[in-house]
Amino acid sequence: DAGVTQSPTHLIKTRGQQVTLRCSPKSGHDTVSWYQQALGQGPQFIFQYYEEEERQRGNFPDRFSGHQFPNYSSELNVNALLLGDSALYLCASRRGRATDTQYFGPGTRLTVL
Amino acid sequence: SQQGEEDPQALSIQEGENATMNCSYKTSINNLQWYRQNSGRGLVHLILIRSNEREKHSGRLRVTLDTSKKSSSLLITASRAADTASYFCATGGFVSNFNKFYFGSGTKLNVKP
Image (cartoon, rainbow over all chains, first blue to last red; front, top):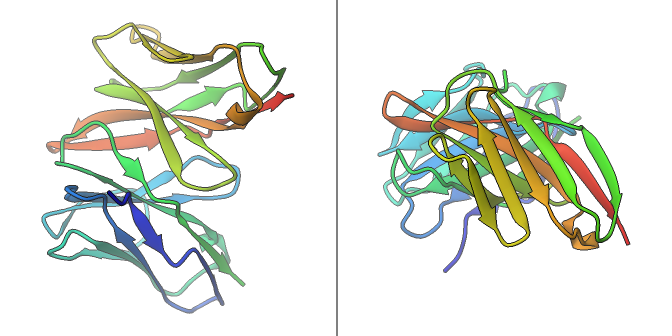
């Protein structure tokens, strides 16, 4: 049983570009959350998807958007990249919107030059 | 902003010693969880304690929760070099029928062989 997978592993972009990160949840999971983790900091909640809709959002600008597909996989899109967007982006999945325990993928390391 | 704050920020001990990390939070919670992260990769779920529980054990891990003081502690007994990692607490609470999680900034544990 595969866990949460994310692609790509690493990504280098320049300021102003756009990026798309992908996440496949653990089998049987239907709720996907995205987090941004800057170096030396804890993960910060970006948003959460359930039934193909964004249900909750953290304190992130509209440059950060997402999508959830019918197979529960998800994408995170970031437009007009800034240097400060350099971080590890983590995807987490769980079964059901009210479940306590979520499982994390290995993350995508984004570097903005 | 993040809900939980871990203390200390860094901890260095000898193999075989016990390691204690603390987490404080600000608002009421439904549950509190501890995660481990190795070398900036994905987070691994360690243990969950609900708001109506005071103590929980899992192998060499012991977690306590004091909701009156809004604090939790994680004790790792008989530490091993393989326990070297960053440890994060995450508070969970229901917002609009969805479980939402906030992470602290983490404690970096170094276990010297």
